[in-house]
Length: 521
Image (cartoon, rainbow, N blue to C red; front, side, top):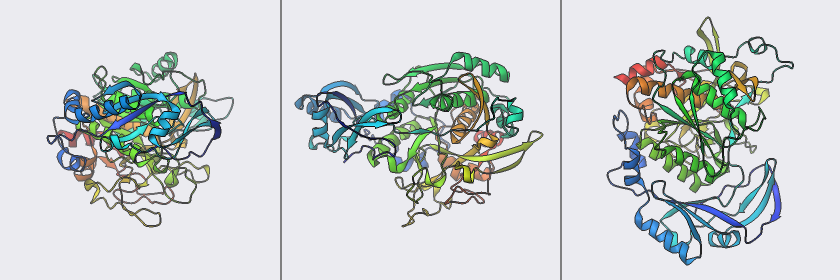
């Protein structure tokens, strides 16, 4: 059994589809499972302190789809009269095309028209089934359901109109460069020669805004490359509070703290198919070669199928083996993650054990020094850092000694705890940005993922190697060496902060210079 997402909260059934309407679906195949490659459960034991990672070519050869599986899919598709429009062994994906009625029948779902706030989409009622002829080879079927899959995790600070100077309108807000200084990011690096991949599921940027922003900061304008995935492209909407806000926040935070970095922005449709294709495109991009991927989009695990989450996690395992760090925002709606069933939920893809999950704090300072840092929770205003215990992924071995609590939900299951780290995310102590020609102050854990991504590429340039999959080393060695600032006050709803790791801010906010010193040992 594989998966399509469950019903989403906004939108309604808008009727039947044309049975002959063409549909393209992505079949995600199992990894090759070469004995020379560590399996998922062994990554935490094998990769800490690893100095050499797999090249992208080696990754394709050792973890790509097995030729026999590809052959089975090809023969099955031909027998069913389906068109094979793409077969990518390195990504382990095959794209099939055919009339929607036939595909619905083959995969055991009903396809309907869905109407939501952002427009119409296709809705798969039921969970797709892998046909007997593909059993064992195919793990997930993506693209039958094209409803929006993820939300951007940023929060604008409401400002008065007309807008006074930002320093007066939001006296506790910061340019990202000041946040980097407070967190002791290494001053001698710039990230030159490194690339960060930014995953974006909508919106866009204007070159004029980018140039104006960085010139205003007195920082070099980063090299920007827009990469189109599945037909999506750099398309600003003109709505500051829409996806443009996410795109610009990612660019401006990451580019400010690592001014020499190249930013490759991967624009993809906001579907399960588009989201995974964007990650895979960044992972296998031999032109830009990002050493860090930053993701500020996600939604609660309850809104994903287990098969889809597994397919994403297998891509993140590939990233770990290739030495590519993946920084992911944990969400801005506290321990409920926006689900109104009274239970605790965590955000995906932040809950994957193969990404660095980034939570949020409220940061205040004076005279260039931190005076207070607590868990971000706006209370009545509704914004708070995500965090908690996964219902999909088991507790990784490297979290065994972190005292991850049982889930706050009935049954009190054990599982992967998030976040791993944190950083400033409260809009009231947020980041000064420029979006669609207008200055603004944004917070949210969306700012924390590109902040950590910028730090990691700074470290990569100074170390002469990528920090890579940081989680096992962080939990087993680095946290004890003081590479993070412990946040021990506050809560995100169901979970409270405390000494050491907690389900609100993980190990805490960065101490960049100390992290560099520890990684140099």
